[in-house]
Image (cartoon, rainbow, N blue to C red; front, side):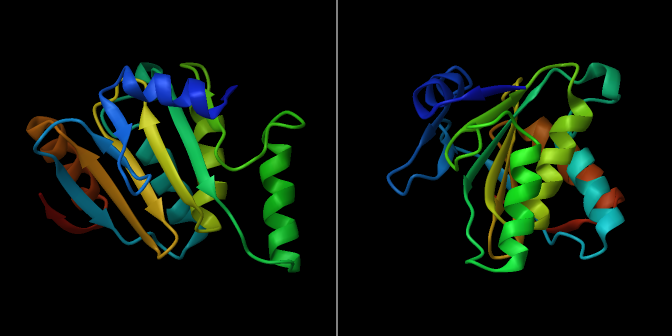
Length: 176
């Protein structure tokens, strides 16, 4: 895993035709995008499976995994035992000093399971996070309001993603 500061993260995203909008939300530069919405499962095992699936949505096998960026935008649970537990999990998953919100965690082609595990931490604690595969053909946005959006500018990719999520019983809505 490589940790990217905001400058390097924005350059990495730019090479994939992605940028930040005025609202600091990630977007494709394409005019038309398709999206699907997922209601994350409450069951831990199904959530873990979802996280694994989200990093592999457009590749048939784990051996085809080419890497992914996990960008955990913000986290805050207040000064509670739950927050301290979340912080402990997050800090154990990255080198010392590399745990601030806003830093990107870039996983290479050999790190599929670590990427899915980090996504599980972020989604499990309902942090605002992005998952962007190295191919840049879609991105996942987990909003703290308990929704997950999968966005793609490519119709064939969006259809495949919707079909995969529907087959897994995870699709809530699809649209443009």
